[in-house]
Every structure is written in C-alpha cells, then in structure tokens.
Length: 594
Image (cartoon, rainbow, N blue to C red; front, side):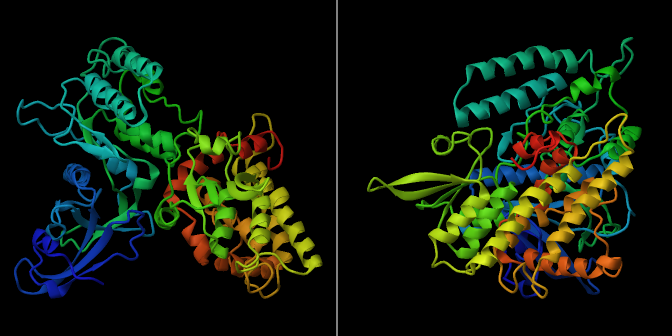
C-alpha cells in the first residue's frame, strides 16, 4: 500500500489522508499505470464513516495523456448518464501536480469484475437501452448532431469527433479520412490506398448511409436516424460481468453486464456493431436479443452491406502486441542483444521458445512481428517470415554472422546445447531418457496439437454425421491423447520428469494454458471430468491437474501469457474455422502440424 497523491485526495474530496491508501496489485488490468484507492470518508449526513473505492489510471505521456483521459472521462459519463450502472462513472481527471504537469490521471468508480449467476441486466438489454436513448442536444444549435464534445482515442488513434448534421459526413470525414491521414503520418503516403479510401468515402458511404436513404424503407417511409451514445470500442475484451462497489450510490452493488474503456461519440447505433462483429465474442444469442430492442435500421435488406467487414478474410484484426505481464516482459527485452527472438505474442509455438529463454535466463532481444508487415530484418533471415525465428550469432568463415533457426522444437534443442551452463537443464543427461523424452515431445506435436485443432475447428457439414456426435468424437479423441501423455509422467511430479521443469512441459504448456477456449466456444466445453468423477481414469486426471497447476503457477508461463481477452478474437476465428494460419489451413485439409 502507498499513500494517495495530494492531487487525487483533493479531486476525490478525501478529507483524511491517513484513512486512504493506494494499491497497484490485483486489479487484473494490463494497463501499467493503474491503481485502486480505498478510503474511509464521512457519510452524507456526517453521522458515521463509510468505505469508498476508486479506480485510477495514470500516464506520463503529457498532452496525449491529457486528451486521452479527458475523452475517456466524457465517454464514461455519457454512457453512465444514459444507462446507470452500465459502466463506472468518471469522477475526476487532470494533471498530477506532484509530477510538475508531466503526468495525468483519470479517477473513476471501482468496477469489480466477475460475479456468478445471471442476475442483473444483460449486455443486450443495457446496450439496447443505450442505443435507444437519443443523444443530448448540441447546446449551440439545439439539435441532435453526430460527433462528440471532445476528441477520443481508439487505442492510440485520435478521433477528432467534430460535429456534423449528417451521419454520412461524420463517418466519411471523422473516421475514414481521419484514419487514412493518421496512417499516412505514421507510415507514409500510399496513393492507391488513398484512392480507395476517398472513393469509399465519396461513393459507398453516401449510397449506404446517405441522409435521404438510411432510416427509410424501399417505399420511402421512415424518419431517418437519431444520434445515440455508442461505446465506440466494444470488443469482447471491453465487456464483462461485474458491479460498481464502494460508490455510496444506491443500486450500484447489483451484478450485471458492464463495459469499460470506451471511445464514445454520438453516432448511428449500428456503428457499434462493426467492432463487435470484427473481433468476435458476441454470438447469435446476443444479436437476437439486442435486435428485439433495437431493430435493424431500414433499409433492412442492406443491413449486411452496412455491417460487412473484412475480418473473416485475413487474421489482420489481431492485437498488435503482448498485454499484461507479458507486455512488461517484452519491454524488459527490447534492448539490443546478439540473440534475437522474432515473435508473435499470441503464437503458442513462439511461447515454447520464450519459455525456454526465460527458464534458462539466456539474454535475448524480443522483436514483435506484425504478420502483415514483416520487417526486412526477419525476411532476410527467413524468407517465409514465420515465427518463431531465432537469430543467432555464429562463426562463418572466421567471422561472426547472424544465422537463423526456425521450428520451435529445433530451437529448443539448440538453446539446450548452445548454452550448457545456463540452468536448469531441460533435457536429461542419460541417452535413453533423452530418447524417451523426444518420443513424447513428438507425441505433443504429432497427436495432441492436431487433435486440439480438430476439436476446436470442428464445424458440422451438411449431410454429414450428427453435429453433437461429431463434436463429441473429436472431444474424446483429444482427451484420449491427453490421458496417454499423462500416463507417461513421473508418478509424483509435479512436472513430466519429476520435480524439475523440462522440455516436454514447455512443449505442451502453451496449449495447456489455452484449454479454456473449449469452454468458451464449444458446446459441452473441454470435458475433463471434475475431481471424483473420473471413473477408471480418476488417477490419471488427478495427475493431469497436478501437472497443469504446476505449469500455470510457473513464473515463466505467467509472464509469457497475455491477458485472456486478447486471445478471444484469435481463437474465435479458429472455433469458426475461418482462421488463415498455416496450422488452421493444415487442419482443414486433414494434415498434421506443418
């Protein structure tokens, strides 16, 4: 616990500093500048004291932080005003005076995520209410307009949100053209891209979103559209179940579906659906319930055209970098090193190598690779640009030169042999034990991983076997391989060969910590029986759970795994069998791991 800065004490009207404390632990957030404040304050009538809880974000990014926090402040309060309890209210924002104006803060009510049961309003109900509530009048014109009083940020992209009377004008200028100009500033001008965006803004947008078209049926009946408050960045990682606690406001303690981290504006309600559909995580049940409250806008027959996006074609929507503890680890390995790991934070094959580097404490440089903009430094080493690729300095004709290694299991053995003094040793010394270990490493690659993906990517075919039976067949195939592998473990463990972690553990760990995807996306979930319900396999599943806990608790595993919400859109595409990775395509074609 730490003392609360005086700036925050004043902003939150906390009278006694000795009764307030700041904690930065246990918040479940990947934002490195977050904290929770607990304070004891007098009640409204002054008769007793009560606890208050607050959530705080801070940033030292100067002007950018100032604008970002102001935008989030206004966004949260716009949503909370329309639908109380749907998100935390923002209480204060401004400079931290202790930092001489270099750092800024945002203080909000405390949102306690989680909570059992399905009580409280659903996301469909609350979002439906938000999108059914007209935006406030523009004080200058006394009209409802499209825009927002302040700029907001979607990620690090600034959105000016200047007001327009026309939704088509707002969307074309404040979104399409603004994003194009931002891209040009960062990446340079691309004439063909500018031509495509400008033609879309000038031709497609008016045709689908024009003032005399959107909101009217094919017979010309309708009233156009009314601006409403939208969240603006509503992907599955920005929605959960939870409740506002310690606010002192009646009714805040009810658990319900909640949202956070908004980037709001006054917009057409369907604008919200673009990101929701692009990243996945919201199924047909949600959209059916939502559209009972907010019907599809006329012309209904153009609904799919308005909401079409390219996400199902490439996997380009993946988050660009690691989050949570993994982000901290990446930042600690940005510095130049002879050994370089070209990586993708979401890739389990990369995580295998990352785990070995961390376990053996070998110095390395981490280089995140955007799979759609691969750096030339990688392509010069590995023309296919696949990750993981390890760049190693080796002697070539008497000169040390960078040479590549790829294939995760090859890299793992290289690290073991090239760094013999780095502990722990990840392969046994005994030749027979080494050979046996390689058999079970191969079993993971040739049996477990393909079965994992056949189960995850299963989609019933017209005229094929019963869908329930087909899914169950693949579930049992996968669980059967897990049991076979588990039977080969050391009887006491907790790891595969005993009390020390070794390569078999590292090879399977990245998939083991992703097993939640089956509970998320497949009917019936993963299917491992609960303790005491394993029948003749009870001891096998007990041993599996012991191994899994040891792996999940391992520092290297925790620190190389990003936050769950950022994996969701990636694995949703696998579950829908539309992912375009080499492994996904191999699975569809009935092949093994490529």
